[in-house]
Image 1 (cartoon, helix red, strand yellow):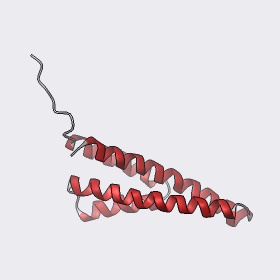
Image 2 (cartoon, rainbow, N blue to C red; image 1 turned 180 degrees about the horizontal axis):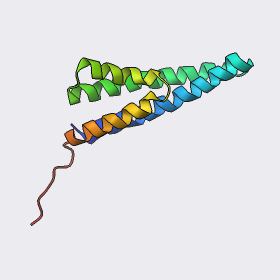
Image 3 (spheres, helix red, strand yellow; image 1 turned 90 degrees about the horizontal axis):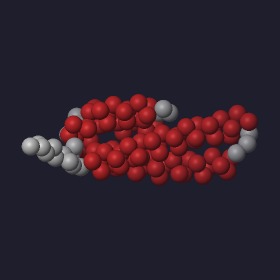
Length: 109
């Protein structure tokens, strides 16, 4: 597996998680304080597009890492739970980094 597969996943995991937190804050403003309806609409659309890209990259990573269906499903769903993607991303990185064959180790003589 190439390092770029993991990097793409990491970028989208963070972007999706941050946008989900921003979306949650805007929903509180919209429904709790009756302000920011237009901003909430825009933020939700941006998060939706980012989440679709996140799903594609996470599925690509999971198929290359040969995850079982339950693990893949948990990684995919973590983009819908506020702050979960941050924790899942760290765990995924620890598990996938040993599988990266981007830079072969050379013995120095």
